[in-house]
Length: 213
Image (cartoon, rainbow, N blue to C red):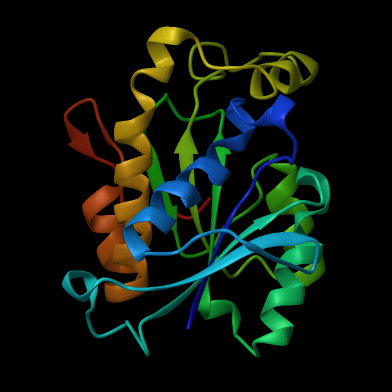
């Protein structure tokens, strides 16, 4: 079994914000895996599905997928993550976390097998509760800092809790579909393959795939 967690904040007022990209990627992933979010446990919504046959590779295990959306609010996301890992007796190697990233341009994906929280409070809480940063994460670019490296922290907080502009919203279905495919690739073929297929191509050159953050 593979555990894929999408980060966000619960409640309708947050549903379309940049910080909730993780939830929306999980919705796209659930559609591909034949799963529906109808159950709750450990302060989170969850759904179970199957890795589609065309995505099954040597890393697929039994093909079962456990999809989780924590409802603890972003800063306490780790509570739900450790609850599911413990209950299902899963190792960190079976975990993938999907989140937003203000340091990446809108639409850019970056898969990593480990790394720092990079200022993301949800990742920071997961790292703190796991006692490790060694778990895979898929960062989905929502823009915000790429044009201004010195942008104030409070301004960035307002940015991620704000909604996408209409022209940005039009681009999101393609982003969510591609991010869902990256998750399926990770589940079926492993992190290295997902990194090679989906990580950012910028300025005409593929970024170093094994660069840790």
